[in-house]
Image: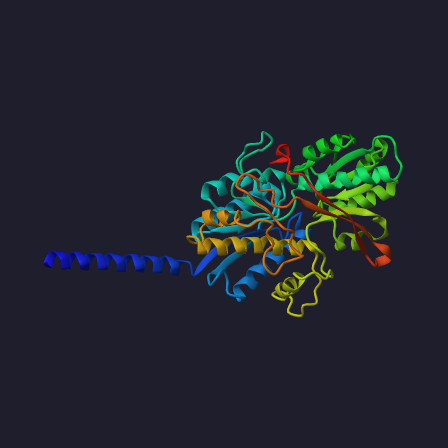
Length: 419
């Protein structure tokens, strides 16, 4: 009888220990750490600061409104100035000292450099690089550099956005009554960011009937690009995809105007915004660029939440935000909802957050309807968004005019995965 009583006491003690252990684990998730890489002073700071504000304001707003179902987000922003070694050092510091669970990233070169680290450590990275190389989680496509099972980004890849632009260009060319083949040129620095869509987009342009001209290399920094513009002019190229951003784009537009280059410019998603039009003035005409969100003044339901988030760093609520800011918000809120799912399904770990990215179909974060495009991530395909909204912008005497000219939905072709 005594043995039976002792056994019951032992079982009771074990049950108490398990309960305490569960309670301790729950308590350990009173907070989780999120790393945030940003370029605030390097060559992409022109838009890097804007996107970073969207991420930081979102993290602060989430904490101010209950965190991740009660779990507080600890976070740190590091300005790595667009330098890969600094990015890797920040990542290693966060993993060893802060036990980082997820990371909000930034550039293409650093995100691609970290692919193997984050896969080994099972750390989801929500990057602002839309490189197609980050979209193949299994490495099944021969074009894929490395499998990227823990990399996610909000929006169409650079490759798909460029494909959408050449689709628009093909229709634009025909609408003008032209019979001969149009000519297409890729323009950008010899760097992972501008190069990411170069081969993929050129192949698709050829598929659509374009004559693809040799790429033209220009620096990521502002400069005198008249020689490159003369080269474009002599080639007779009709459509040019600009892979750079900021001051480099402004220098290109001004240089080509100076030498009389007649070409339809189309930019990547970072190369077109109101700041570019204001800085370029009348020299920029009918400039084509893609977006993945509406604009600050657009009346859509989710803009109400965006404007509340914006007050975290602008209490007046009067500062207009560029569409890059909204993408930072969307990236953070997809992460937030995946973390919420993880907490309800075993705890906020990197592996569980990754699983949370596959739960929803046609997924729009709650409260951001009309702001974030519906996304679909799957175990074998991380092309979350395949819709590209295409706009045309003009300086228009200082009253910048931006209007939508097309909406393209790209096929999820197997040969385009990871490319």
